[in-house]
Every structure is written in structure tokens, then in C-alpha cells.
Image (cartoon, rainbow, N blue to C red; front, side):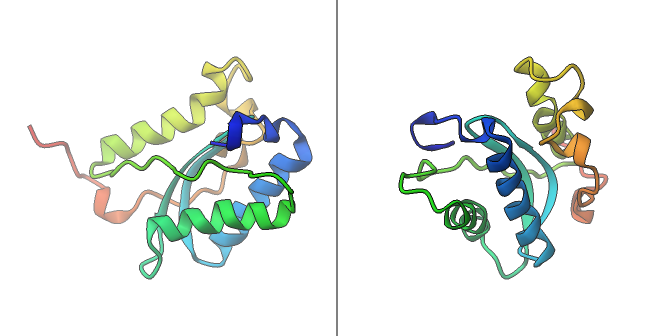
Length: 139
């Protein structure tokens, strides 16, 4: 979430800078990126941190890296983030759908593929981690 819920990412250049930041750290091997969507005042991302990177550090790369590149005199992000443990294939796929359908639910696109700043349009996301394939929720 952005600080004071400012709509930073309504500006295309700012959204593109965040997107580039995410993809740069991904290409450096800091995390796998399974799904992402950049909304006007927040982002959703489903990532798997590299073995030597904590989730907190991966988020610091994204948020801190973007803030550094933006060079804003104002706070950019809220200090926290929400995390959810993904332990089954079903939960993983549900999270991908939730993330990619976010712009549709907000009335910003008629289909996930139509939203420029989402993984449904971007393609080339990392596959589901192998340890989740075939994992079912326990009854």
C-alpha cells in the first residue's frame, strides 16, 4: 500500500518504473515472480524468495528499490505488507486468479489480459513451485 493511499501508479511512467524494478530484481534471482498486478495505490505480488532471501528482504528489494529509483521527497509506501503462506496447489492457483482479476473487480478492465500492469497481460511468469504440485488441502 502506498503512503496515505496516494494513487502513485495512475501515472503510467511511475507504474512502469515499479514494474521494471520488480522485473530487475527477479532477473537478478532475488525471487520468483508467479503473479503481479500494479493498482493505483498498491500492488499484489505472488513471489517465492530465493533460498538465501527472506520474504521481508524480497519486499525490501521491491519497495526500497522502487523508492530509491523514484527519488521522491515523500514517503512512498506504508511500512508493512501482508503475507500469506501458500501450501497447496489449489491455494496457489486461487491467489494467481485473485491477483490477476483485481483490475476486473475494480472496473479497470473487462478481462485480466486487458490490464497492462498485470501478469495476465505481461505473461512470462515463473511456474508454480514444484513442491506445491499435487498438494491438496488436508481435510
